[in-house]
Image (spheres, rainbow, N blue to C red):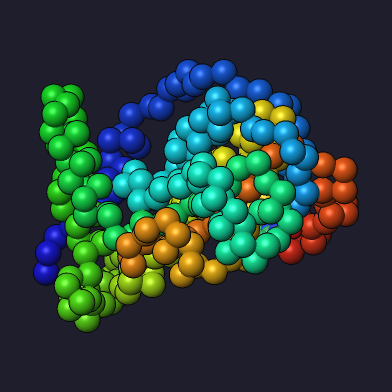
Length: 260
Ligand SMILES: Cc1cc2nc3c(=O)[nH]c(=O)nc-3n(C[C@H](O)[C@H](O)[C@H](O)COP(=O)(O)O)c2cc1C
């Protein structure tokens, strides 16, 4: 059986761990932004300045993402005709029709191999890259994400994951194109959250939407079949009545399950 050690904590636990300095933080400002973000369904006619859009898109790209393979895209639909068509594809919902800007966040499970190679090239070009860092992209990611042409490797992977899993913790997914899509959606959704919080921090608002026709979105943007639309996010300046009612969440204990 192939011997693979995905993670090694020996170095991290064999010596005292000193506290490291991190860049400035402002918890109060962060929580204020989180609390102020609402899904806004009606916007004013005010445009979102281009520099605000770029800052929010850059914030989106800084989201954590699996293996740093960045299997995502943000399609900023700037063409007015296309934007109108996209609003119609979002079934004419007010959050899309009244929006100043629309961005389609797309998960790209189909590009993981190309991005993996980009990571290898980048790490090889950097003389300070530790061997383990390179090994991760040369061995582990390939092992975990490869499904083979038409998924031919899936039964072998399943067998290998299962047998290995009897004796040691083993990553058991992705074993299907659907699971690979879920893998890419997870990271793309985090980029969406970054984008929406950044929008609010800039004084503008947003609405995530999954009420759209994914096939038509794909055609409008010329996306390949392997691309999966995660969300369409509208942005603009909040209008009177644009927030539908007070915010509501179920009690915390329905969400947080403590394992003390
Ligand atoms: C994946 C996803 C899809 C959503 N789709 C829509 C949508 O199509 N139309 C809409 O008006 N709101 C949509 N929403 C917004 C939710 O209804 C909203 O986030 C929820 O009611 C909580 O309200 P809040 O965002 O103001 O806290 C969506 C949110 C998410 C995360």
